[in-house]
Length: 258
Image (cartoon, rainbow, N blue to C red; front, top):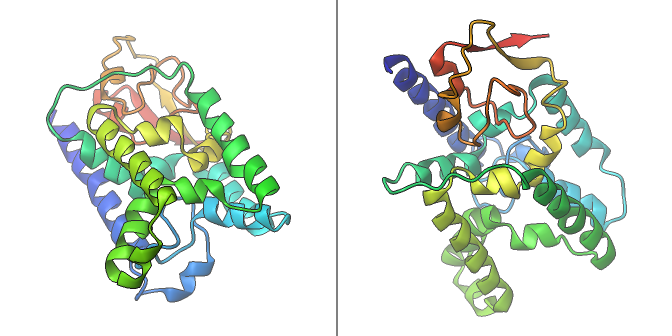
């Protein structure tokens, strides 16, 4: 138990540091042109870097191939898979904090998660923006509403006159995810996130891998600790895994470089 608490503090520390660095525009304003493999809105007043999904949609709307963005995501994925989701993603961290609010929790299986994520990715990130020439995922993104939409309106009063039906929809979507994150662990990451969808492709082939020791008794104690509800001993490198290492606390799971 002591080991798990120490580990949780370490991950929370890294998530906090990442949140600060990624939202420290005054430290690196040049970074706005560089997409990094975490979910943080480019339009956030303090954002230091570009959102890879926003950048991806920008090129899709222009009908151009996003070589640079996909190159960065490929490099990140082939090295670490979804490690960024568990340790560095600001929006994932926000969901983790909301889930810590003491209340009865809901356990949701991952049966349709892959289908839902890929459907959203293909339809809302690629097809509709390509046809309409509008980045529709970005327009509806709850992270964008929380990190950019609301702050921009608070900081720039003239923008308030532009608030309309679309903004109401954005607030509604954000509210759904805020409330659901209190009861369900990482609902956005598990069922929506297009960045996680891309990085999940690399979980089984990345250099960084998780492995279960032969001494594992398959007691399933790791599953309740897993924020994405994985039976770790069955598939330690599941595409759902965000590599948060919560399962390491039992001592039967470890990481390796292949």
